[in-house]
Image (tube, rainbow, N blue to C red; front, side, top):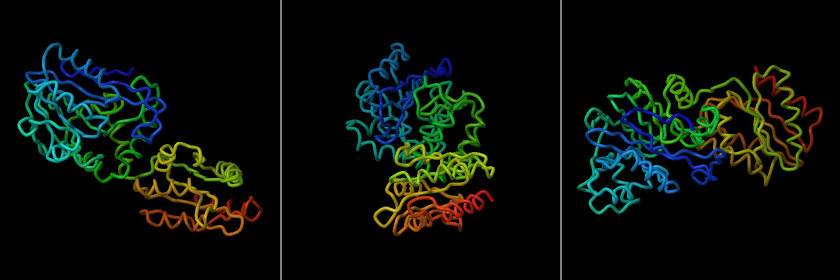
Length: 388
């Protein structure tokens, strides 16, 4: 278990979920996920978010132990998505005198999720920069719309200089997972928040005005050291800059001939000095990981079979996902395969043309069933062009 200690007055009360198969019913999480929640104890006790229904009992037990016989005075709702807010109604019923803190959009959506009869009397509506003093600690609220829902807000605790960052700076993986932060944080970021780079940049500018000593996200480990590293990663990701010099090769092969050609391509790229080459079979790889790699590297080569007068479906799905996540500012090469009427490159380019600042290589490789001297020569030219 990673270190969840924060301070004498701020206590971690979240839980790991290691039996979940798909996060948000779409993302593979082989090492599970953590649902983070926190209790601030002071003259007034504040619960910072609830957690998913899958861990309600464990969370309530953690909360009651941390309260040690006291009651919560406030619940701050940073984000209404059910993996964080499912237990808002549970807590509101359990502690009828507890106030609920959120912004205007929080309460506009809340009645869609919960029936809290006396909500009007219990709600505390906060706006940009407003503060809530609870004794020694003071909470200051900053709106973070579309990071990644419209009602999201982050909270800065001024005394201990802690940012409660909602989904920002989160990652896949339970807290006891021994894994690199960046890998699963990157996959999490681009698939959960990747579409909203402009909004993330706006939040980073707000955080840049604060003296931050610790970041407490709603998923993943509490960040205590080298905060510049994590903030820099978010700056790179949210500004759609390539993170690493390398070539991501994504292919969709029906009967294996395109896959065979990609083995040759990988060898060519390495021989010509590509610093890093990552090859993914879109029919089999975790699509979220493919999205992560596409954003990570500055160059990409797409190779696919023609299918139904278009492009093989795993490639079309991948391109649609890239477009929805605002993929941009990259150099891309195209390789198509087709026995009688190769149309994959044309179809792929039509989708790429809808994206921002995508430079498509002039050399398009056309394979007719299997690699030949002619198509291999085209592939050599493409390698030269994309590494130029």
